[in-house]
Length: 387
Length: 239
Picture 1: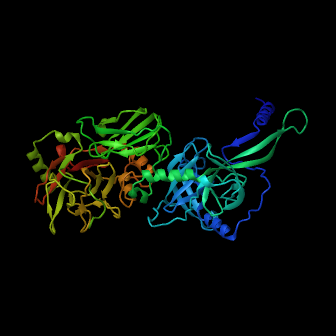
Picture 2: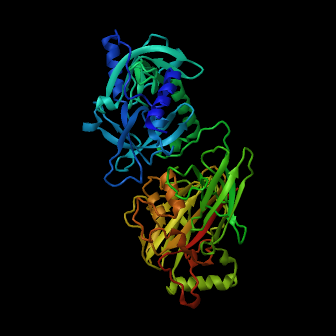
């Protein structure tokens, strides 16, 4: 297609789509005229406290060159004082590959300026909810990889009841927008509406690139939503009168927040899956959300004697994946004395590459297909030199 | 759980000392093999180690047959000694499959073992106490000429948990080379590590010599070479 024809098609398409939905916040939107929020000094102080819980997300891939510094991707909020953090899934996911970034770094500072005084931490994904574009992560270590003392208390935000939020209530957006110079930036608006079926809160508060995953708090400083996307009202215009639209005019935008009750549900899911011991240990299991998940169980035994092999590690990768990293390893588990294993996270039905390794260094690889009622997997391992 | 250093062995009973190597089933008669194993250990003709399971009886620790039954509240200590310069790893596999590196200790700065030195698990005056949960525990012991990076990596965890995180599990599945640990083995050579056969002399009650595990010296090849390991298991069952 020539550039001209392509542009015309694009503009016509834009004309048909009166409202363009953006997965990520728009780089610039013409907002409705803002009203000054008439909140009390006490409320203002509570909102300021919430700033300490909001940080900057930076990401890096292991394939990046040594000179490639972590790059800012969005915002995140500490929702539990033991270091549980929420953000948007799209903030920690590579748009091109749809994979989680290898390194997810969280800059947190009390004065909200991660460039000058932030402590940087490394995050590990715990629960990914692709449907609602939310992710729960744990602060696993400091930037250098040193574990966080179990007694350490992070400044966490209190969750508000987003079910009870009402139209025209005040809202404050806290985050690290690119246009805000990547220092903490707060702006205000109000609740424009609620989409109960779609699980959205709509706001006129400014939401732009970098706000994703941050905090939307009420006048009590409680988290009521996660800024997730903007829907911009863009209308094509024909400036030269040739009958073809040749420009856009943006009339405004609506910010969309994921309500905080979804975050509360994810934390409850985390609580139900964590043992008390696991809660105190920074670990990073990933959960692949799906309505029909398969729990993978099986047995590892010696091909020669039929004896169970204890302590073997079994893991699943996407089918055909040959590189094993924390990003590609979907779920894993190890065998008990009877050679039995149950992988730590259920996975959706489908094809996978199964890898196993015994402590004595036998290796095993095979392709498997999991259905909703797949039988237990039997792995027969041979001595390492037989492979 | 009093006086416990790092972990509780969950519900044990009949202990069986078995080699993970399939070849252990073959070969010499048990009595001959036991005498041979002890001879190889004592005379350092091949790489070998002795393991003693001690059970608290009143105020003292007495040697017990590893196949004895244990019950909740029993306290034990594992002592071992090697006749070679190298590395020994002891991994506990719980009934759930959860794995912890018990030796080297997480706080150890140097995990090399030296001939004729005694090592205690847990160290000092601590003991391991069995709780109420029933099941089979496994102590997997690995003799190696080299450090094993993915086991070393587990020592970064305060509890010695093995592959508790996606990154460490990925490193282990990839071949035991963790990017966080400088490998002794050549890069990507993890899958070429060779597992050696062993012969065994089982320990008995009140026998302070304990059990002895030795690499057969067939053809003079009883020494571990770089890239070789000799693994075996102590299986602990509690009914």
